[in-house]
Length: 258
Image 1 (tube, rainbow, N blue to C red):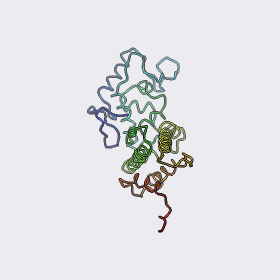
Image 2 (image 1 turned 90 degrees about the vertical axis):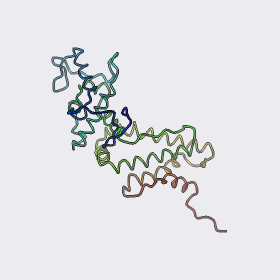
Image 3 (image 1 turned 45 degrees about the vertical axis):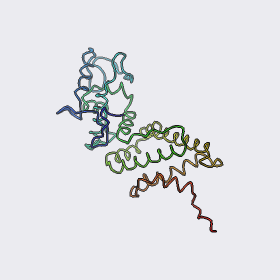
Image 4 (image 1 turned 30 degrees about the horizontal axis):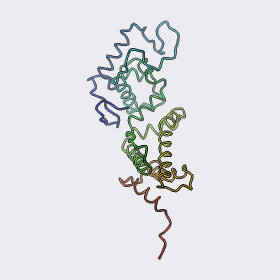
């Protein structure tokens, strides 16, 4: 998700506007206004376990109520609240919707209208902190592969430069439900896009057509993943994507001697 001005703050997250002075966890005035709007509807007050006083427990409706548009300021306040709590040392497992709502200055219902559970919220927090996925043509082969390889490199650089982002990924891998959500909604679509680019390159005659496309994809992605994930001390120069593509296209066998 992106904030209104498109700038990243010191956490690497999108900063969607000024924070109200003295508001906890980056609460904006507009987010507080949405909370007041919730109260003005006459909805019964919440009790600590998340239920309305005197009402049976219900699963909150993840969709916004008809007639009430989503508030970009409230979403920004919620994302900033999660980042602020993690930055203060709170572990992922210790964050509750109630704590996030209190820090953001919104009602829990405001969170549940946007995210049905913590896992989906945390995945959006990660998306917010990572560099945006670059646009690709969807019609080119090798050209789109290069763009996506470069995106892998820049995400690797972002994790190296942000201790918070690195720490979140380390914690996430010990929470299978969260990791599966991130893999299914972020990693899997990226991999599918790479495979489609490989298929376009094969169809265009840019790559061999006698190899399995998944093997070709692994040959392109593998070196970049080794550099960004398995060798955190390895250099990530600006021309790394081009060097990987050139090495694969030329092959590793020595040139034939004349």
